[in-house]
Length: 77
Image (cartoon, rainbow, N blue to C red; front, top):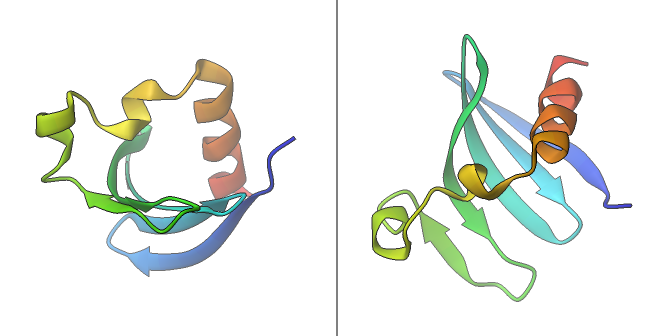
């Protein structure tokens, strides 16, 4: 099972989480997880929201329902 943790609350509905060696900066709205603002891979590669259209989607759109629910539960706790 992946190590999922909140690393920082950045204010204005933004939070930084870690999943294993990955780091994601997420934006939340009144419904929960809205979208990913930036990410850094375990290998050190980085991308931000201006990259998503070029690659076809926001990484949050690729989460399974279970993963999305787990992240939202973590953020509520």
